[in-house]
Length: 509
Picture 1 (cartoon, rainbow, N blue to C red):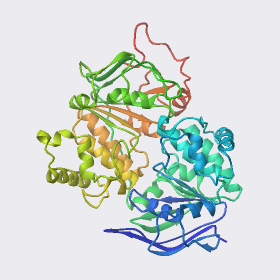
Picture 2 (cartoon, one colour; picture 1 turned 135 degrees about the vertical axis):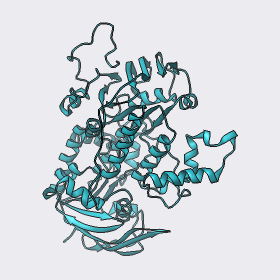
Picture 3 (cartoon, helix red, strand yellow; picture 1 turned 180 degrees about the horizontal axis):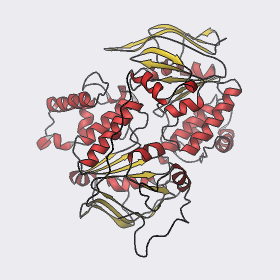
Picture 4 (cartoon, helix red, strand yellow; picture 1 turned 45 degrees about the vertical axis):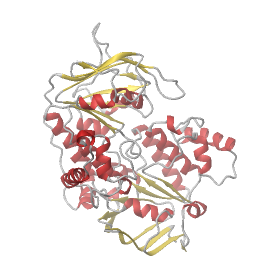
């Protein structure tokens, strides 16, 4: 008997059919991938299985039983757990409290706290159960979601982009745990754009395109290229990256120190690096090692540095706020798509105005102009949205990411700081986003890419540094970068690296 069976499931929204007559089956103990480009209908289908979306027609069965009167609470009671691409956590509550709310409440908060300690070690995702969610990085929040689902001991586990902000070490540990769950009979639906992960982990895969099933394959017998072709219906784009031609310094950070209570974040210690016009500098690191604090310091959003300086071009902007830094050509693209980069219940044209106040000339908002610019961005960047009035929260995660990137790059910045640029983005769109950063570099901009995806960094960047424990490693040039070295340095293991010349900053040039 199939653990999960879908027969002709259809879901329509005004102006779009998200899922059309989708049928698939998942065996007990099977890890089943669902593939498709951004907007293919994957997340809608997963939400239907979890009870968050009611299909217009079709049948869903769990262990042969039709899922009627289906909603998330009933899903959890039936043994279905889901980890969302966009997190569902209460910011003001602790890790343990959030996990406790997701359980059946037979356990006390103290018992859940104890289980979290043990599960974090077992699954290779350690967390402090007493920390508040608002103090956690995006990667740490992802761990909370994963652990909450795993502690429920589900029969069917749905994972929507679960590794988008996890390090290779954490991904390996998670895969080992998922294989153990599958061996014990748990079925897993795995949604991801990382084709190499699907080949490593999954037993079968259903490919969606335009809301329909196009094929079902064994990913272990496919290549990354053949899977990409099945997703896109064409050959995936190729990244064109000519050698960099670095010029003058555009962003210079010198001996930056930021004091933060260690229970609330990661203090920054003697951070120094330079990004030149015409280069892409990558910054690798395990989530929670100071990236959030550094990005806030670069954007002018965080507490004033205890010492050190941030310079844009030749101007010291250490004490300047975000508006002045944007006026000087700095654009920041954060990893948090909803809530920070975009407001979900505002239309796209109003989201455009959030970081582009210059478009409201003389303080006068002109909706027709903003709608026209938004429509141009949607068309130029192949963003799947009905029109400029579509709510930001109605877009798929990948399409919202494409919109945020398009909005910031359209401002023609001289310095771009982007965190997790291709998180949750399909293989074709990811290459297109990387190509835009390369094009921006070649036009003379300075680009800093902060990411936990080593493949992304090695593919896109001209030089690389690693952040760990609020400190920065020596700078690695193109011939020095390797996944093995970067992986080791992400644990802070660069102390034995060759020391820089006396008086030189190890991460600047």
